[in-house]
Length: 261
Image (cartoon, rainbow, N blue to C red):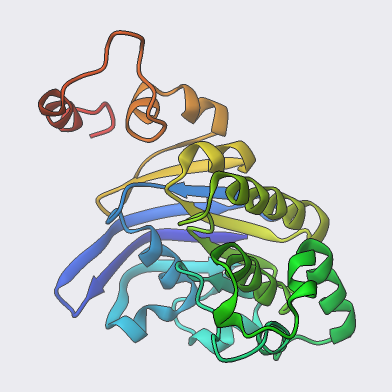
């Protein structure tokens, strides 16, 4: 469904952030894009959704295609009309609007019965129904995360780009959010590209995973294959063999000689 072919992204026409990145997202699947801070994960999502231009960034090489149609030549509004919705990192709600008004804004471009879409969102997030008249700025962090996902659902997305949906949430709320993402994929048929630092949780629900470092894809595979990779275990899952934990100095040296570098 989605294909990025050898993408390069520059900020301010000087700073090279993505360096020949390629990945694919098959229709109806959840694909996890994992990596540390600064790896280029959010930049990848913004390149797909067309939001780079607002941050003085641009795709200078390569192509981004949705069902064979070039996205990198379109503006963000056109990309949204094609059914590509990005849920931004940091729970970007319209704080001065109510929950219902936020949802109305999300479904502005979507055809069909709005009442049916409201019912669908409230089925996934009953808490939003209970707080439907509350100002979004007064919601808890977990409720705001539910709201931004629900607002994207109001547009009946074909492809959802989720940027760190578990960020800053308690373990219980993280589990709840990931379960709902799985339901949306299964019940709505939405294709999902999931950017996460919580690699363990993301790999539990994904059908395929990519590891990013320094603006490049350094490893990809099935979730179980990635979970068993010794470098992924140590640097993304926090797992080491009993008795083999290294000092910080040793870890810095080891990072320079990972098998994929």
